[in-house]
Image 1 (cartoon, rainbow, N blue to C red):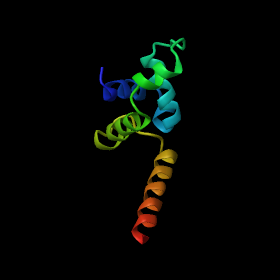
Image 2: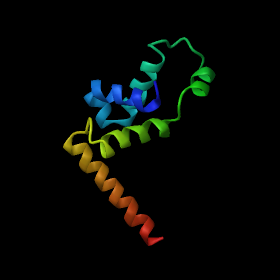
Image 3: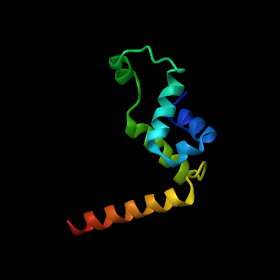
Length: 92
């Protein structure tokens, strides 16, 4: 399965992962590793997609496809953070 497909499955099954990238990342890695925490840290880091790839897939699924949306409070926080970034970099 692709990163996007795995993210889609996590989002489909977890309201918490829809609202928190940290929970999304933990759930994603748990899913990929099939709960196996015996792998070494080096193997884990080497073989897993980057945090950015996973969160980018989440944003695409939620924003472009309109699926598995976060709750209204989280959505408002994300819009505010986006607006703050735009304002900050517009000044520079």
